[in-house]
Image (cartoon, rainbow, N blue to C red):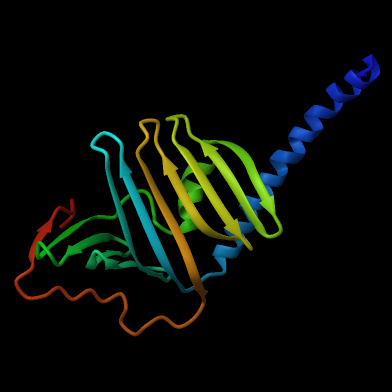
Length: 205
């Protein structure tokens, strides 16, 4: 039986518990940022799943993701040969099937895992879904009703899900993560095949 005194104690304790939970989430976030701030080079295998609810289309892609302080490359093995290269100023998307490359201004959201979290963190409601040993799952809910679910292991992001209010989603899964190891030579030199149709949409070209 819950006594009146117990109710009063719970009422007093509840704000303290909420503050502790929020501090715990902030600590998790800060630990992730600290870990990624020490990264000079990063290499991982990724799987990217997309779903468009309106047209009921699902697509799965995979490949290797590389980055250093200035560059990021998504080198797809499926679809084979596709590449997405981002440097400090530009983004280049190359598709060997259409023999076409699109060069555009750098987009607002970066694909680096810590930058993805930072983009959504301050604007979102936060919830700790699960915590087991060194693996943590967090849910963020944005004002636009986007739901972001993040899996973190040893302060490194291993999965990042974005689901909008219409049911469309993109899921990134990272495995075999290599941090601060030498990257392949000239990995960020994107040499387009002769005859590639280049579409340049940069505003300052």
